[in-house]
Length: 108
Figure 1: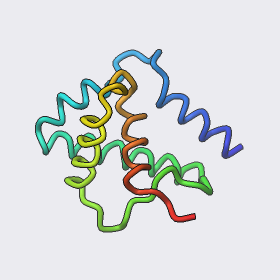
Figure 2: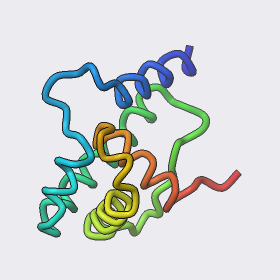
Figure 3: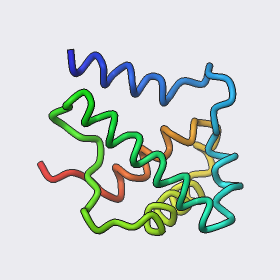
Figure 4: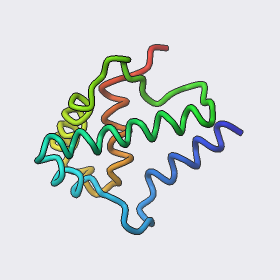
């Protein structure tokens, strides 16, 4: 059941059919301002973390260190968006997952 719920959560994040969903291109435009980018990245990070806690997933997609700052999350997110322009048509949420899982992988 946990895997089904996690799969549904990820499908929603990667879906392009949703109306009014922020794309990577839109997020990159917001990320010209460090404060806005930090807020967006922190919101996605918190949302994913709470969702995983709510379903009590055994395997997290990414593992943030306890001392991570919203500024660092913003820089990681902005760098990922800038380094992957071919992916900017995807949702910002799916790109945040990719950025955070690449930068903060979980130990096996």
